[in-house]
View 1 (cartoon, rainbow, N blue to C red):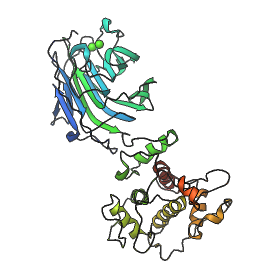
View 2 (view 1 turned 180 degrees about the horizontal axis):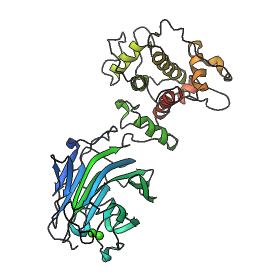
View 3 (view 1 turned 90 degrees about the vertical axis):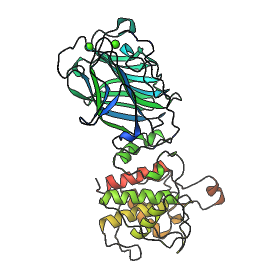
View 4 (view 1 turned 30 degrees about the vertical axis):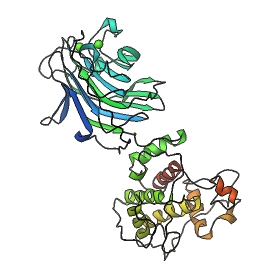
Length: 425
Ligand SMILES: [Ca+2]
Ligand SMILES: [Ca+2]
């Protein structure tokens, strides 16, 4: 389709909000509609273009700053509801990401994408030979413009068939994978963040037309700012199981976790495991006022997950040691297993049989030993190598190098393993 001059609607939305998105459906409040796009409240879906010629519309996630891993899922519709026009219907739909502006790009063959920059996953329903299109309807990963196809596959089975289909676009560590109706159809390496933050969905018609609509949109995985590669799978599962407390959203997962943050991790584990919300009575700790985890610390104290560092202090901003972490996680397990269990009257038996003592066993506080070996037995926590557990720093040199501390991603991995390895869901 030819491009119509002057049809660009240039409206710049660059919200420098933190990337904070739990795994849930995207609400209308988080979406900005451009051009001919609108929400059809009667049908419960977003129309990107109506079934009319020369339309272009776009839907952008206005609250998201996406320049890292993400996963976007939705149902989409391309075609007509009332007439059969499979060859001339046009032009298609495009998921745009790492794009430079929340606008509507060119109509016609531009799919509402050309002019937005960044990457796109297009479902193109009109053959434009000058754009390098394949003759049949196709799905492609494109860069900068729809004519720059990085990967292309046939889309006749899931386009212009007057049916809803499911599309998932995932970019993880610069590998973009595209699934339609649960089947992987495209994968492209070197799809790298580029300093542009917009993510959305565009569509256009030209001299040919189709209804382009989307619904059931979910944008996930854009929760952590930075993580180690080893932690990817466990962080993803932790998020799916809702084990990541909101105090950690948007944080660097590779840095050490504080006692306050770990209290939030432990309470999230307890609440998810039991399907309950713990009460948060006022605690005796005088040093937690104003802390984002204050409520979770009160809950942790109530549940017996922690008794603080003294009768009146919690030391919320101190980094948690590995033995403290093992002890607190084990108490979650105790409380889940026996609701009548209390920390002051702790006679819970932990089976640690068959676990060989660590060479630095003597450095582990007696109170923490059963927890440490119980967690090791169930492959929730490991030693650090050379048969050492590293329960805590005991010399000034160890303190200086952060010896025996845990990172946020390690703590979340251990929370996840507790749930998975100790009989949770
Ligand atoms: Ca067509
Ligand atoms: Ca085309």
